[in-house]
Amino acid sequence: MNRSKLRENIFKLLFMTEFNGAEEMPEQLTMYFDDIEDLSEKDKMYMEAKYHHIMEREAEIDTLLNGASAGWKTSRMSKVDLTILRLAVYEMMFDEDVPVKVAINEAVEMAKRFGQDGSASFINGILGTISRSQAASE
Image 1 (cartoon, rainbow, N blue to C red):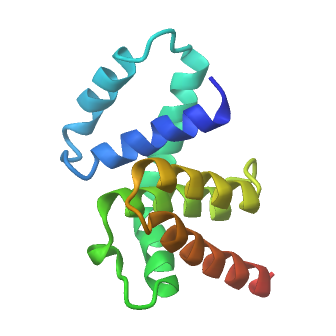
Image 2 (tube, rainbow, N blue to C red):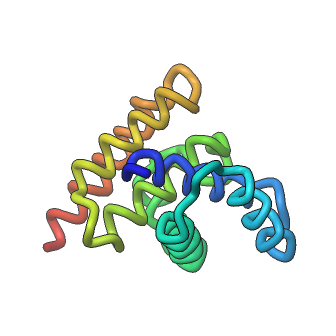
């Protein structure tokens, strides 16, 4: 499975957490993985690990998002946009294997596919703000 497809599956796993309690997620993950044809153990382990890493940093990621999104706190964002942003911010800030520009580009592409009309530009703007502030602090 290529990186974009893995990322899309991780997005879907994260999106599920918006509708399921933490106690339900282990079973939900198992059912999700069971539905993917020809899923390699390596890809499953990668997706599950990244999902858990993002969830562990959710509060920290949301703090970054709230600071970068003037007038749009995470509580007001659409669940799709928020999920895409959480994944992208994790990749930008904590995943050394993903270049910042790739994380932003992939997030914008996901927003075009899964979001509403203005989602891609909204996500691009927030991620651009975070990227610039990250570059300024280095």
